Image: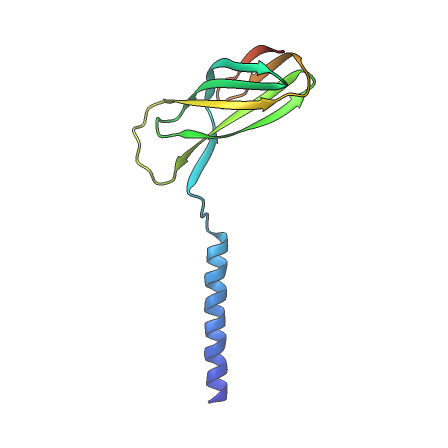
Length: 132
């Protein structure tokens, strides 16, 4: 009896280890995130007090994509702003290029002129902005 119980216990432990491994390696995120195709329009909402507030319109693969986040890289007086969009996985959406609006707030260290570059998947946009 003791030997059979030991084998059963090993099978149960192995089963739970396999289940745990499968759960840890599975992609559980709800969204798929990508860099926008391009930033097509930028409007300065605010450029004062070491803060840039920008309203952007970007091209995305379809109209179901929503704003996710942005990343910022600084190089002297040049700011590289990458805008990302997200879509729920397994969602059905019309397959046509969509537009996505986003308002982003960028902290800057000093007042002055900045070149802001918006790299996209297919094309980039540059805009010169004066922070007062």
